[in-house]
Length: 318
Image (cartoon, rainbow, N blue to C red; front, side, top):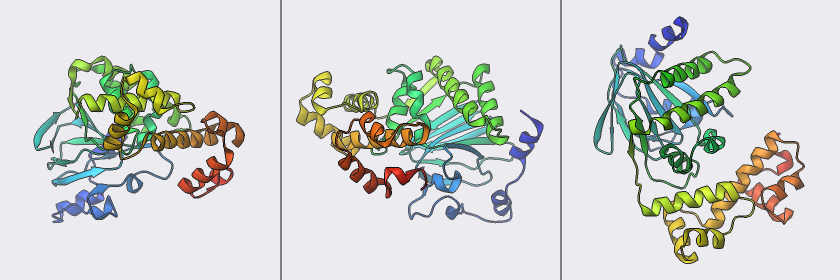
């Protein structure tokens, strides 16, 4: 790692200085405005940015909390002890853990020589990466559920890959790009994270998984995957037939596990795809409406404005 970046990682932060000077509790206002301790990505990520890193705060126990983003803890130096679901996990140098939005964890105080790097990643960052991985891959399954905000099962993936040089090199390159961004960093980071996921998936024997990985969850994952691939023409009848489930039963399972109906899940996906096309394509709005599967422009305008507070034409200026 570059010497100047290493110096930044080892230097005391303002928060750590206050702790060493006697502050006995984590200042939750730095991380959230909510009553519950749910760390807010808006507190840590600049507006519009999908991924960033920050050094984990040392010298103090970090109380149990959730976050509204995907967190990846990477032990660059030393170790990290955390408690997840009542179980103590000690990560050693070079190891990584992925935590989804719904997992609650507590982190024990780190020492001066412990350098833990936290990747803060909004779920939509992973949207395009699903095509890189096999449908049955454990990482792919994890990512699919992270992309649907109403699937609220806590999950983590713990990668014991300290001896894998390719993975360590990729992590270091990602850290360098995030600490010293250039004009090409956004593209480089996406490419590097994609390569990292591929390398991690090749080492599936080194992954420890915590998940409510049961029969019902597998059905819901298949529903998510179906919507992701067929959002422009998806129907409940078709996916019910594919999964050999009666319509009413599948509807109940979707509502139970996501809090949404099939129609609502499909609408979420179509609207997020419309936003993506508005940002990156030269399509007209009428072409985008057709691309995402709506036949009635008036209805599309109505649900779009209800969700985002502006019309599609004004969205990019918002």
